[in-house]
Length: 208
Image 1 (cartoon, rainbow, N blue to C red):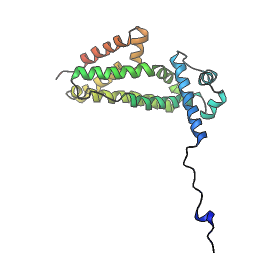
Image 2 (image 1 turned 120 degrees about the horizontal axis):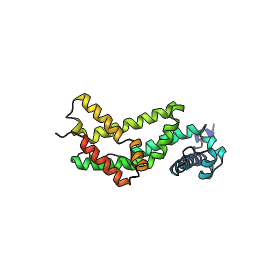
Image 3 (image 1 turned 90 degrees about the horizontal axis):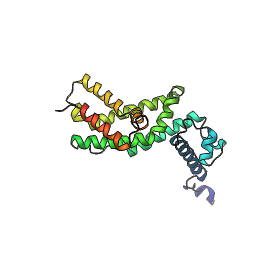
Image 4 (image 1 turned 90 degrees about the vertical axis):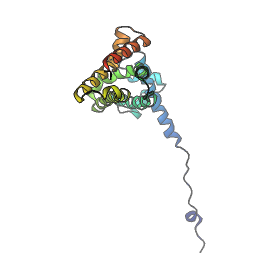
């Protein structure tokens, strides 16, 4: 009996990416970018209509990809955390004290300047969305971990209780809220705000 060619040579599934899925993911990303742009322009709570217009899509397109605007905020936070981790890789960890302070402050200031509008939006609605509140805490803890990494030699000479107190103080000093005050309350330039942080950090760290 001759073998059935359909059974012996089954058709191979195409390995090409699903074009519709790629387009949907691209649309999703553009909606996130539109939301970020509006926040950056000072619109604290963009509406679906504003986001849709900025992205160049319909309001329906937004809600086909996000259940509501809080879900969009959560997705945007996750996007920002992922990008921020890539952009904020620690540098000069083994440098001398002035080098480490300058490097840390420069990278941290860049992150605060870029993501501050989103941070404000996250704080405003975190109590309405438990997952978003968790993201806020994760970001704060990541800041503490970076401080431990950059200032290990100085923190390491302190007793545990003092070390933890100093770590919390440094975390508050280099928070988004602190950057917001320096830049938008006191009107400092980016460089002047960094100088404030550098001086304060140097004074707060113990000397061996």
